View (tube, rainbow, N blue to C red):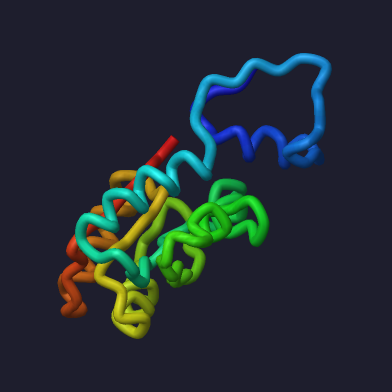
Length: 142
């Protein structure tokens, strides 16, 4: 039985792919593809084709979000958005100024993340201190 994490976390952590059939599994949560579709719909109300700064941590969650085939970027393919990886960080974060600088370098004014509330607040504060002001931050912490 699984909850809270997208199905990709449970499938890939068990060494399987999306087509694998488990003898039994019950899953009660959405997938990265679902999250990406919902977030992209919000972004498209602001900018139809946007560079989106991606604030991902360095653990299983961040690795899944970055996964080339099953991650967030793959789920966004065809929507016209360009994900910009802002670089990994370790939770709990103590300094996210490097990620704030990368946001500015990429010219992204939309941000997506799966940070904790504390880390996201730190990032937001340090981004504002560095100058850029994101128009929208979408965050899903499962």
